[in-house]
Image (tube, rainbow, N blue to C red):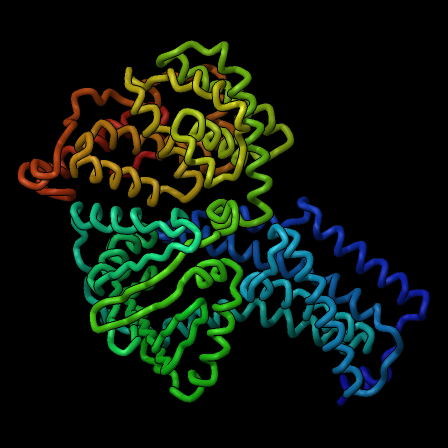
Length: 592
């Protein structure tokens, strides 16, 4: 009652103050649209290794990065809610009118927040996931301002309530997870993915790339439930680590699909079992979800609330910014017993979508500009660089000297990442530019060809393996980069150049070099100082010429036991032994 009385008697700003607040709202919206106010937490999420949750340390890093991003994103929209309240056209009294004021101020601030975000997203209207944190920030601003206007007691009470909620929410969430967790996994194991199955699935997806279809052309892709299980069994361990999770997909008719997941909780012997299913239909871009089912651990959610929530969930998915172009390209989704068929046309995906997924919308611009600066420095130096191994060393020295110079005012970790991405694009593979954004002008590619003369241990292909793996590590964290390198060798074993432990060595060395150069601020500066004294190949890449190469699939299976077989493990261990014997990497070497 005290709060109600204080609100009813709130004193609102004078007309002059309201006009000042309106001008302030416009000015702050323009300020938010500036790139330098894009939340740094977006870069922190990528930097924390969002695609690699294999260890407790990685999970903590990602959680911290997400927390930083969430806090910054909420806080930067709080002033917008405050200014919206202060901009109301006249004083309002009474509880009902005050609620209408709160709704109006919240709606105005959220609309302006949407316009600000659309500017950040290259004038695409944001989706629900984009608006969630800004909406929370606007709501906090509206509530804080109304509490302040309502009196000192209401303001203190609202602030205390907010602090308590922020502090207790993670603890309550953790206790809830433990409460519903179970001692036994629902899905005990995932299918083993062989090299042949990886190649089959890769070729199937590559041949049916929706971006390569002609306008008006349609195509259908059919996958068995085992194919979906294999894709999950291949991808989940890359992110979560071996043995941490198992998944299964059950396809039933008509249109009924169920996903089952068993995830071992970190630091415990308990499992979080998740079962989610629905009758899904997708026709001409319109999604419908019926008969939803959800079980989280020992808790099974009632059917009726799920039915009520199903249209809301469908609308959220349908309006999600990154999902819109994908859904628009799908003409029909058919689920039959044990098989799913998708008929689709050309999909016009947003430009630099991959880069935005990795770095975040605003942080991608900062990283892209840093990489472009390093690319230009390398291109300017290219005519003066020698060929062969000396050229490779000179290119690395040029890149990290520039990173060292720019680190006087910028983060050394960010600059080393930019240096590695520039080296990856120019010495590794030009396609990496798609993951960063445009950094090389068309007329500059002839100059970039000069850098293609560099070699590593006399091998041009090892240069590419090394720097592509280093760049992928910067983009996606260690585990996916290692997995991509291994998969490349498995592809070669199926009729290409053959599996090569030497190539695998180059992949692992590139990954480790990137980890060494971007681990933290101290490590980043240390590698800059080391390379200022010159690049010695022996410090970063051991001898690998005597490792087996050109191993075709039949020999890989029969002699080595396939990937993970007895002889394969012996040579893989030798790769690791040589890698960790390099002087530069000894500080990172795992404990024996």
